[in-house]
Length: 146
Image (cartoon, rainbow, N blue to C red; front, top):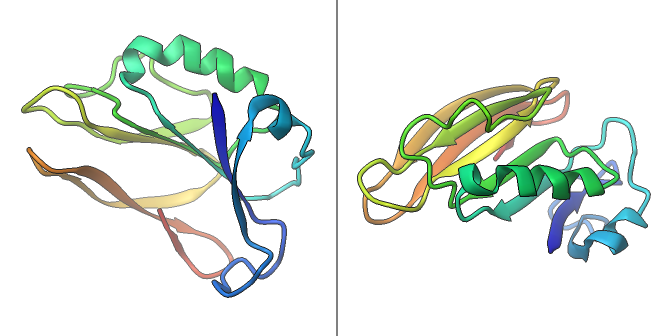
């Protein structure tokens, strides 16, 4: 299984031309060798869950093998029909999701660390095209839209 991380280890995060911004894929063991536990570092995790309800315990077990807690965990293909069941949760994270209710599959979810100040601007569901969430995170630096 691959882990996706965007690691901001420089103070030049908002400079798109900076060579310091990195975005890479890692195997779990290689990822754990990175030693990236920098306090206050913003990081994201993404996974196509292919039914978050069905795989939630496998995903939790996998995330427990990683030596880093991410700021945001993002999942596609959650396959929620409406609201997710109560067992789909992460301690100290707030769940924001958009479900596809008119047909099978689809759906997106983000678990956003409770310490982050954010506002969900819009959740969009287009029956035959796409589902997405637009959230605005408020930092001391310029705002970041995810």
